[in-house]
Image 1: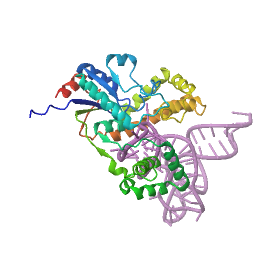
Image 2: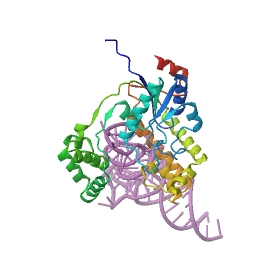
Image 3: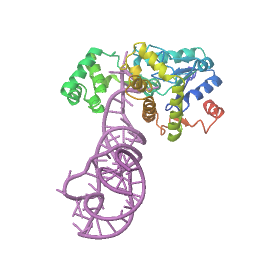
Image 4: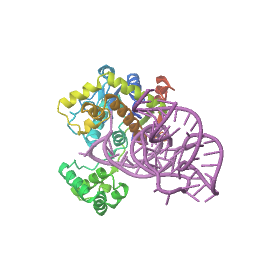
Length: 307
RNA sequence: GCCGAGGUAGCUCAGUUGGUAGAGCACGCGACUGAAAAUUGCGGUGUCCCCAGUUCAAGUCUGGGCCUCGGCA
């Protein structure tokens, strides 16, 4: 047989919010004839542009973007659906002879794509979830967790009983399929040569950038954007409306906080989010080529990508 | 200036009859397989304003000082 054709390359740009992933990925995509596949759980919503720091129309004109504006804020796009769409977009970009860049800060989305999570094929069952949640409220989280332990000890051992949301999902899969969720979960790495670039900054610098970015979002009209969504009838409990910026502006619009308080809350929540993101993208991960945009030039990054 | 209240963790504060401190938030570290910017676990934080005194022992009692807030002038 002929030597294997090398797997096509997938460039992944990961890292915490406000570190500069967008700027770097635009430069790289232009230089490498690439197209951007967003891995951002907030930029999938139409009408949520400022708060989600979505690429502007000017930026989207520079480089083709995929997986933005997929659904309205009252619609749900599940992880499994996102994963499928991402693979489709990546394969399509490859087929056209271009380079896909997976860019985003939603750790779970990135992991699902790069690690090839095989996600149990059980769509959310709203009424079952409601029943289980009521159960937990009535008899306690431990009782619900005990139910899971009876059906799937391995899964129960991995999930804290107080994390009711994840206990419910695990139970949901076990009850619907009749099989333990822990047996249905697997990883099948996708057939790409994956290069991971992590964009990072010293923590204090990052926090400073967050503060400035939130201020810029306010100036760009975040309050109006959120008001428009609320006026359109999107409820504050929707997943889309609980995102950073939207939730806190909601407090302001409902009179539960002053604008200054709401702004401070956005900044604080974003810092917390950054810490959570580093759990998905550890600085110690040898698979990630970390860089600080202040320390390297795009040309140097390109050299590295070329190997 | 007088009267009152107060100074304890980055912030807001709790601290029993004296036995060298603790909550929330912040902050730090983790988990994560169809809600994930969600949900969730763990963990420090420290001249207890300063000086002197009483005491085996002072955040706690006494005296003095400094500062903050409120009221009255």
